[in-house]
Amino acid sequence: MNKISNSEVEKILQDDYKYLQTLFPQDQIFGIFTYGDFNYGFAETIKDLKVKMYYLPTLEEMCTNLTLKDEIIEYNNHTINIKDIRLILDNILKQEGTVMECFFAEYNIITPKFKKVYMDTIASKREEIFRCSPKARIEHSVRQAYEDIQDFLKTNNYNSLFNACRRRLGSQLYLDGELVENCIRFKKDYHITYLWNIKKGISLPNMDEVTSDLEEMKAKAATLENHPELEQLVKDTIVDIIKIALTRTIDAKEFLQNLTNPEKEALKVIMQNIKDGEGIVSISQAVTISNLSRPVFKSVLNKMKDLEIAELTNMGVKGTHVKIIDGVFLNIDDYID
Picture: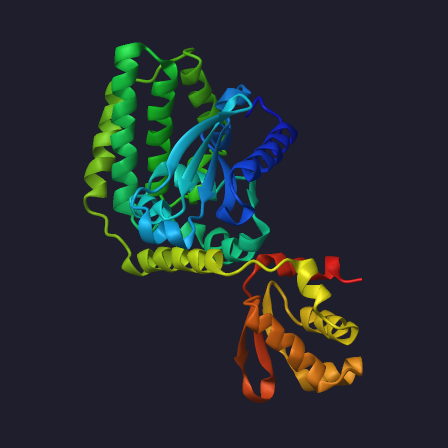
């Protein structure tokens, strides 16, 4: 169990997010996530807390800057890794560990504009995403475990041995079909006690057994196959995020200021028909229950479409399918008087 309280972590993340907004426009911050020892449940001090910010480049940077941002800064006694979101694709296809930890993190802050796309494409599909390349996942984990073992043998650093054994255990659970989340943060007490004892140097594992297990998993990984359909899901996810990043940000208050009072009332009716960011709106039914005119509803929907707040699809007699693009507008009711 972590020795840093959850409330401490929440406050640190909020402070980090505010600080990062002094370095970057909010539209270029996809979100911030914890990773490392805190996510495993083995953080002892603030220095064990690591934070990653996924950075969204501008269109100009995408076209002209061949060097993708990936840097570490120190802030408030811990590190923040600022990483170009385009690196996610390669990291996921290689099943790199920290990106997996970020997207299974209990604590994160997602910029409102990207909250819906995050929930739709990452949070709801993360189990599938991190099983798209099982061979790569195990090979990566085993390779890093061997590096940790070598570091332990050179430096007698128990934390390196802890990481090797953590990777060994996580890989075994992954191959056994355990939920990916449970391969990061272990749920069974005897697993937790086993790893704490190694981290503290209280008891050490049989190294022959550790390396034997790693070799066995490495051999099994060679027989595994990747899942192209899930790899495509990952690619589509990144494209969706970038598309939203490049849309012009419309402030909710600014949008409402450009609506007439009847249009604001129509917007309330429309949003009542949209669950979790999308739904079908029947203008005929909306007119009946609101006593507002058809042109008022059409005007609001067209403004939402023109400003790239929502995608509209004509469903014939059923009505219009409305899908909110900009996550800021999921809470538009908060701004309507």
